[in-house]
Length: 600
Image (cartoon, rainbow, N blue to C red; front, side, top):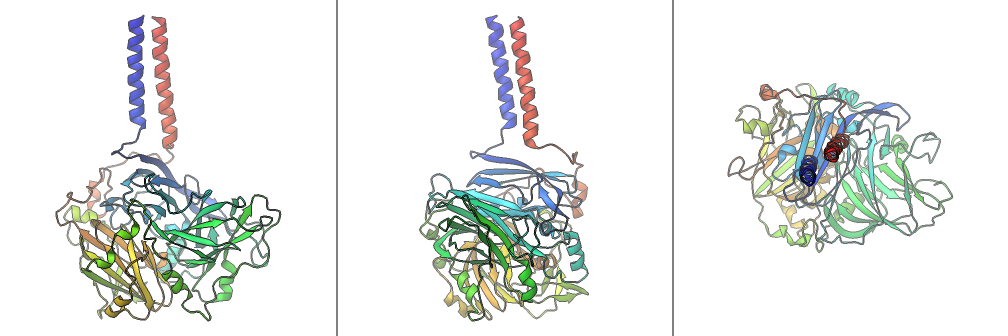
């Protein structure tokens, strides 16, 4: 009997160990966050008109990915849409791993009904970011969600622990579907003024029933008197810069896209498309009433029409007894102060004494002492026609994505997929559509100047990197402008605005091998060709510095015959449910073993 019990104990231990091994995520010495996301449609009516939006796990906006510096991340994505899908990670730096970037230049899309797993590590990064679908204006239908990267325990946060953490997605919104908007752009039309501005996927609070009908669901943020909260605010809209403010409350800016900022209070802040900020807000007002949270359009024409599309949520103290009422708090008035927004942007600076992903101060990287090795001057203009199509350009080139991703073409030595002849400076050549890249030198120090010859604000984003926003001004950039650069505490971020008729200069250390997307974050401009890829090649060759191509890489375009069929289930269960089933099987096996021992 004792021997049988001993044998049973060994068997049970083996079964439990096998179960733990099967259930535990792979790890390279750091924790792993494993999630499964099902991407599909759901029907909502944020502006009173029923429409299909892109949801993740039946959530709109999608679920929070809450992780810590150096953690490994595995995101298993089930594409239940009726069209191909890629998710990209705005501001997350895929270290030496553009295979996971989720844009058309580096990844084949996930076909409808198929499943794919993103795998990457969060190296040397903290802060507030978001993910979204990168293909075909899909972000205009949703599919976005927050990514929070927390400090490791050994690196102190440069402010007291807040009493709560609140994420707000603000953005312009159309009641037309992304497919309809795409068709408008394909037909050479402008998509026009949006139908409203959403906050966390919900319509505006009815502060004025002559403008906003009663019955729309609005966002309510519940708070406690006297407590301080961290608000993480992301502009995930299609094309509209927004001014964000909380009635009667100061907003202390503490972080911008992964960099702790010099802390100062603002009553309002312009947040441009694709940008993210963290604010500390203390609940120090009369708690007997609610307050407005407002996101209103900036730098727009036809102001009377735009007045109807402000996003409005409600800040509600726990003991509030009255609704928010009266006019919305005023936004900026630029009539007499034309440089208000630019001066505000210049005031956002890096906290040089704080650590972030590492304990050493953020100001220890002395970018001012590094010699510039390459300069790209990238100029955008008003839309123009190329081959009869309405297009957007950078340096006269409107990017035309090839069917075969650039990085995949390189790996398989395919020629003719793209060229490396993108002009590094504006020229006089006729505008053209092309698939070409900018060549950049690994370990170099790159200066990029964005010159905006359009009438609206532009925002540019660079995947795989953060850059130092060292200067912005009106007029045309010249080399003499370098004397006005911020050479000490310029904010480091991944998305910057460029004001109409002006320029913005950024500096970036080219320490991340890969092919990285540099794009307009305004979806209509991006769709119409205002993007380019920056190729940072590894001089030592493939698989020396860069991560190798993942085993689950998808094939398309000229390499589509290499793709193996995938056995997929559109309505497959979540990984948590699968783990529950596995646990039930293990328990049943253990009980059977115990029963067998007892019967001996």
